[in-house]
Each structure stands twice: as C-alpha cells, then as structure tokens.
Image (cartoon, rainbow over the protein chains, first blue to last red):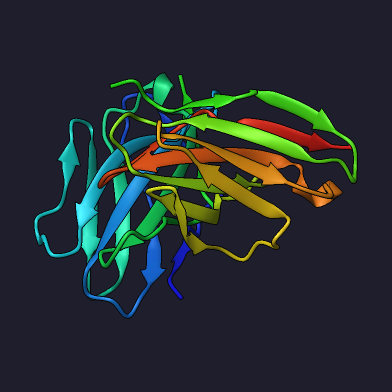
Length: 115
Length: 109
C-alpha cells in the first residue's frame, strides 16, 4: 500500500520570505500523480499544485513550485513571497495512475505566516 | 463550474443514531469519493462511487454506506454512530483531478 509522510507538523515563515514543506512517499508503482492541497480554516480542500510522475520537469503555479525527486520519492513544496493568506494546513497526496483510484494523504503541515 | 456542495455544514448526533450526509458533485464528474478527516489528521478514504456503483473502499466497517445518483449527487450513511465517528466528512468529485466540498462537521455525543 502507498503511504505519504509529512515530517513537519508545523512550520512558520515571515511574510515575503520563502518556505519549503517536505513530503516523502512510498510506492512500487511507476505511474502516479502527486498533489499539494491547502486547507484553510474554511475547511475547503483547495488544489495548490499537481505533478505527474512521468514528467521530469517540476510543476510551477505562480508563487508555488515543487521539487520532485522521483528516485528519492520526495515531493517538496516551495512557497515564495509568502503572504498572510497562505496560512493554512497543507496536505501532500498521492494517487495511482492506474484506474480510478482514491487519494492517499499525509498528516499535513500547519503553516503560519508572520507579519 | 458549479463546484461541490455538501450539506449540512454541521451536525450533532448521539451515539447509536444514524446519519445521512449529502453531496452535490461537479456536473459531468462521474466519480465521487468520501473521506473522513479526524481532528489534526489527514483525510482517510472511506469509499468511492463510479457511475452509481461502489468501486473502491477503504478500511471502514459496513455501517458506512453510500449511494450515488444519476444527477451527480451522492449520500454517505453511517449507522450505529460511535464517538470515534466525530470528524469532518469530505466529498470529492473527479474526472481527472479532485474537486472537494467544504465538508460536514459531525459531532457524536
């Protein structure tokens, strides 16, 4: 079974600075997807960024980028120019590329942004 | 996009009761998944429906059951509620990516 591990229960960053959230995963599959979701106090799980395992290029969405290391099974999220609105729980998630499979989530990292 | 809507937003039940949670999925998304998120934890997969049939289930007992309807809405039913069922229940609809609702917060007293 696939597992996702987020080793940082809490992180903090100064406004306008850069922060990196860590995620590792375990799988024997070669075809899969990786995601970062943001969950603010409103509870809605919002997709931040997505990475297909077959793509070597790291995904980027505005201030959010990932460092995808397939051999190391590592998928970290970098947030640049942090804003107060970035404060939230961040979840790393895995989905198999075969069939209609569910997401497997890590336990999350709580990010605080300090003004 | 119409998004994913869940109802109710909050619910309080007592142990032993039954509860039905509802989800209105994104139009055209033929897969709906339900997740349980305990306080301070990541979401755990309960089950998934594809074209009105269950096609995947996590490690949850049979008292957790569901339905998916042709209009992309779905239900999660929980019988014989236990205290540990207190959690946020999330519905997600998907075509390729997953679109989540804001969840139903269930408290079992």
